[in-house]
Image 1 (cartoon, rainbow, N blue to C red):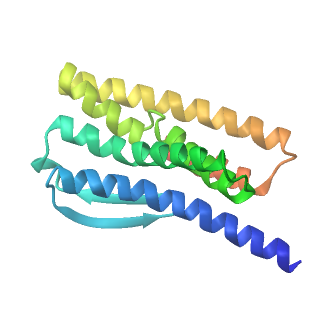
Image 2 (image 1 turned 120 degrees about the vertical axis):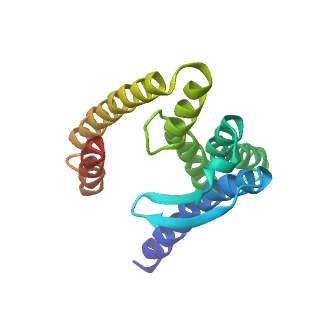
Length: 176
């Protein structure tokens, strides 16, 4: 029993560390762009570093949006290199946590880094109204697809409670 509790605690710590690396990537890019950090919000499913975006260009906003993803990918690659010499379940969990955070944050959903990237990228190419419209439609479509995928996972997992909670959080955010 104690071993089970310790392993779950270590797994949580590894996932938390991957999330911290992600946020450090954003922080690094914000500092690199010389933007002021206004506040940091810790939310139920992540964190948000609010910076003075009026001081940054669209290219800098794109770099900041991708900063966490890039840090997670770099960490995962370094972990894979290390894993080739040192086989360890917890190292594998850490690699997978970084890969999962990077991939999930690439989704073009408004509250994720991929959505912020898409919006800034579109602002460089089209009018503000068109960028807003395309970003919104892409975000809602992605949220619906994510909701369907989560519902499928709930079904095949035998109605896992954690997945049901994730489903409900996603459902609420569709109407954001």
